[in-house]
Amino acid sequence: MNKPTNAIPFVIAIDGPAAAGKGTLSRQVAETYGFHHLDTGLTYRATAKALLDAGLPLDDEATAEKMAREVELAGLDRDILSQHEIGEAASKIAVMPGVRRALVDAQRRFAKKAPGTVLDGRDIGTVVCPRAPVKLYVTASAEVRARRRYDEIVARGQAADFEAIFEDVKRRDERDMGRADSPLKPAEDAHLLDTSEMSIEAAFQAAKSLIDLALNRNT
Image 1 (cartoon, one colour):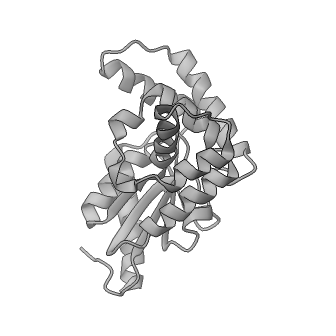
Image 2: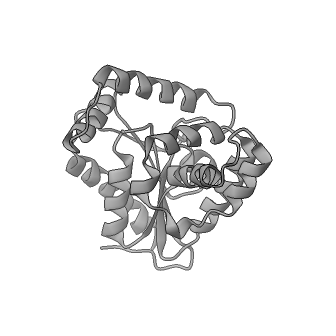
């Protein structure tokens, strides 16, 4: 397997809407290439959790920015940070420019880790790492993404309402794509992966082909 041989860490930027499969793909890519992985959405959730734990308001941008600058990226616990109330709190602070600046700074520092990194989120290819040699935009229809989320919840033995999840997915899309600061959109040079009718393995193989091509150019 090809790996970067120069001194510049190789960055893979993976963006896309909620439940499109970018997280699963990102983790598989990072494991395959021996790269560091960061789910940047967890950095916003970690900031929100810190505010909640301290009993601090979620509408004070200066306080939220201070918390964001103190987030330790090495200690992000996906299981804890995936709790619904933390996600709701994260959505409130994620629109704050000060919080976004602080976390983008931290994410860019992470992207400098050798031999390479995989960052997934909403604005990696457009804002965080616009010069990444590989940019992927992973998407799927809102209905498919809602069905995936519904199936995940049911598989955990929990009750789920498909229509409510479907509406939540559409609301998140509207919020992410419509925000003034770093809206969700594909980078101009991003490769589109529509996983609506694609298995995880097929998506991984498509991504791997693109990554291998870029690594060959990089060596």
